[in-house]
Structures are given as structure tokens and as C-alpha cells.
Length: 73
Image (cartoon, rainbow, N blue to C red; front, top):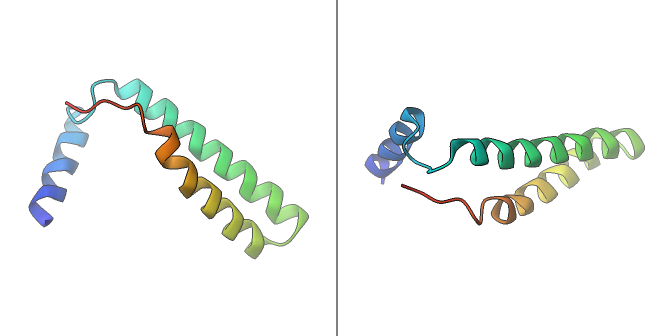
């Protein structure tokens, strides 16, 4: 299991894990900005603890949707 993880990290760092690195970065950035916005907004409206919980749940649930169309090499 550790060898598979290590191999995936090495391919990712070399830029050979995904076919289109720009799309990966774009989708990651969309998720990051949405999660950050939700964290700051909910933390300001309610309280920081609720903001962290809400942002992490929504951001985590959003990842499969954002990354569903990515192609691996």
C-alpha cells in the first residue's frame, strides 16, 4: 500500500499522473476558493467552529464532483 502511494506521489510530482495538469489545477482551485469562501462567510456569520465544520463538509463532498472527469495516464 505504501509503495502504491509513493509511486502515485512520484508520478504526480513529475507531472505524469494526469493527462491535463491545467484541468487538475483549475478544478482544485475552484474547490479551494469555494471552500475558503464558505469558511470565511460561515465563520463570520455564525462562529468559526461552525464555519470550519460546514466548509470542510461541503468542500469534501464537492471533490468527487470536481474530479470526476479527470483522466489519468
